[in-house]
Length: 334
Image (cartoon, rainbow, N blue to C red):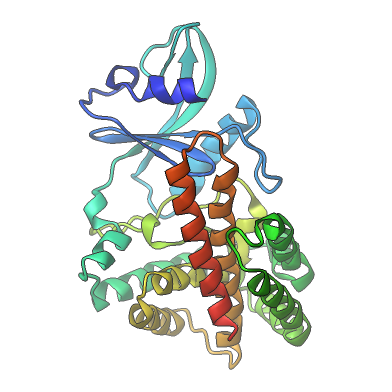
């Protein structure tokens, strides 16, 4: 994997003329950012909930990524390209040797217009929040649903996700999450299922469980006129098939993680009105999903501690980031 990263970091290894290539890594992907395009290669990892362990699986999920993301950013995703290996080096530009892997090709977006950057500059306006609320309300109202998808909104089905979270984070107690936070969040989650069991079924009956985005945070929204929203969950239907409130909760949580409590309130108010969310207990459900989303972000940042391709400084930052997410999740229940 390190050799692939080094090789594809060379401008000549990419299919379009470029002078610069920078590399961004997540726990599941390597992203090569060129002058005008972006190429994303999936890491050969298997976390249980995600399996990119073979080239065949990575190819399949690359194509899934393109198809699913075109729902909210139809012009951004250009297709899937093979990565060739000629025995000496990897290339996206040369069709020599064997196909060793695959990359999703995207147009490069103006990073300065990403929602998180706009927010950090203090330039996130109420109109932008209203526009985002409108896009998401329309998307959620038309997203695919079916009896099979609706099953994922059942409390016993969603509990698979939260149980998995606690199992996978258990080993990070005392490292990225305080033991008392872990214990309190686990207990609170169990009590919520018992207390609000009927609310999950109510949401199913209202058709609120749909094929959503699944990874809706500020880094995945670009505040250009076409307002593309990208990088949805392609690798596990269990994370994408969810209550629409679970989807918007991610974005609200992300705003609050960055200190945007007022902006989150504005967005939620606009979305709730446009999506016609009128249940008396909807704010309780929103809190549940914000806790879940913050915990997930803490978990995926914790996973970076086991990634051998990143260095000590990146791991230190991962610990700090994970701890902040877990702390936010804990703050929602007290």
